[in-house]
Length: 360
Image (tube, rainbow, N blue to C red; front, side, top):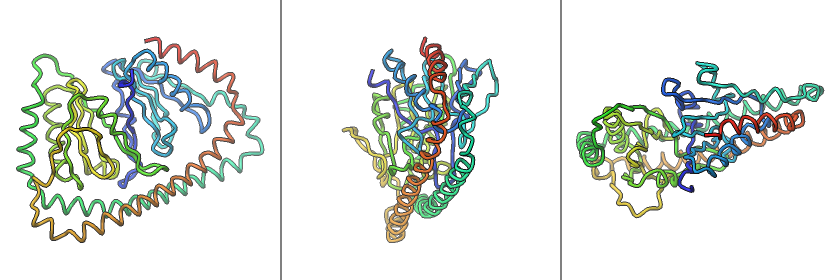
């Protein structure tokens, strides 16, 4: 049962802006069912999902748990991929609205259980705290954007020193060795995930998920990601071309530029990058990126690379500290909404929905 408990992020406060995969996490044409929860802070969305996840795990159902990057102790979503069911928080900043309401998606409106009278006299507080929260998030974005400039510079330096032809050649060998071409059916589908996130607790990562999900892991030790990105993109395209479902692991800092991994659940196989913020406790052999880098050329930029890395880390730390302030503001907002909730009525409603969902 333990190996059914998998953690990912479904969104990222990245250096390239807020990036969400919420609209990519289910597929109506493949028979998926999505439960989209609406409601303000403190309405019990995360608690509800934790109850569902606990019940599913007790039944031995494969459960993917998605903490919130702005508060890793809360949940953004729970996915039961084998059952084709997703439950998610559909509110801002990862707003999700149904495309096929009633057929694929069901809206769970937790806002129905507010006692509106209890908001009387608290309007100014709600507005003030909400505006403060938004202002703090803008500051977080500025820190992250600044960090992104230095991380991108390092990536560009490393990319210019990378022997891409050799890296592609190696990726072809990996595909030939580990990925069999499928003879029947074509289940090709890409799902995007994150295994790290910038949070109020610093950079939080879930390397254990890889080891739980896969029996075989191919690890590439790559500080800057330029080699891994070439290899992963080739493996991704090859795997999809073979008809496999693919979990593409995007980099939490530079998701638009860097792919950190590819997981093929059907083969219990992962190709994953290891670096400062993501290390795996396993005896699996590492493939070192330096095999595909022009060392002499890279050495010329050593001081610049070191400065960029140090500066980016300081900015990421500042972003995390600021995220702590946003969490404090969010907690204040939650208290106001909690005081207006009819939790008895919500519990009865949630129990019925939970029974329907977990009766699988």
